[in-house]
Image 1 (cartoon, rainbow, N blue to C red):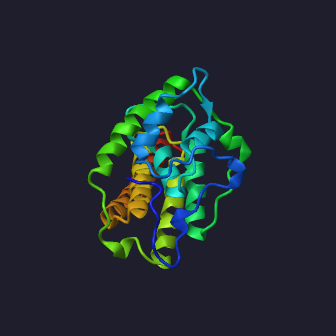
Image 2 (cartoon, rainbow, N blue to C red):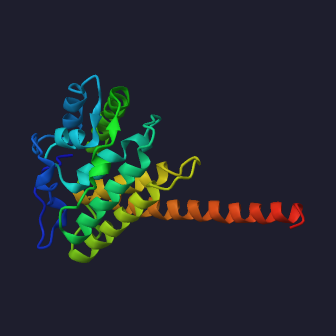
Image 3 (cartoon, rainbow, N blue to C red):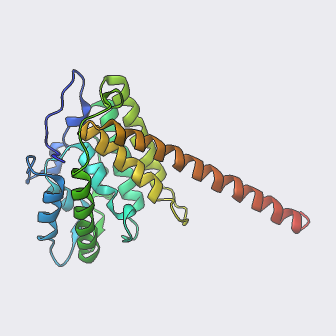
Length: 232
């Protein structure tokens, strides 16, 4: 999965880079994403990194690669406490960038979020293996879901929605995993022009909305039953 591959088409927001204010210093745009993650893993300092420092090490990657990277903690059996809100927000803002074709603004408070070294190493090692497997099967296909201004904006809107759903504070199984997979498939599918992955992202967005709706309906029914039981 070459994150720096040029993208074709008259209107192409997917190749936009991070704002210059991020001072990115490690472009490495010709390397596969799994290779970049492995190199970052080997250079994590003992004190950990802020999210800004991690983004600088990630290099001048496209918005979609950044979205993929930030889904890692929610795809695998690892945990980075307090990461769903800042990571989900950045994914949503990157979706805005994809939709509008402009680099997104990232709040200073978010990029100063500190990540411990042991959490980062676990995330990056497992993410490296995951993306290495993905790189073996992704390739351009089903272009109806990846080409054109309208479909690009639609996919950007769904990335925004996935990021916002990822930020939800529900302490329930799958509440982070489902929107994370939606973001991953949408980002990877658009980056690689793989319409099958984009379609999988659509399915995950639908499943996420269905899951949250079901949780809301069951919660409301439970609250009503409790009130009835208490005679209120």
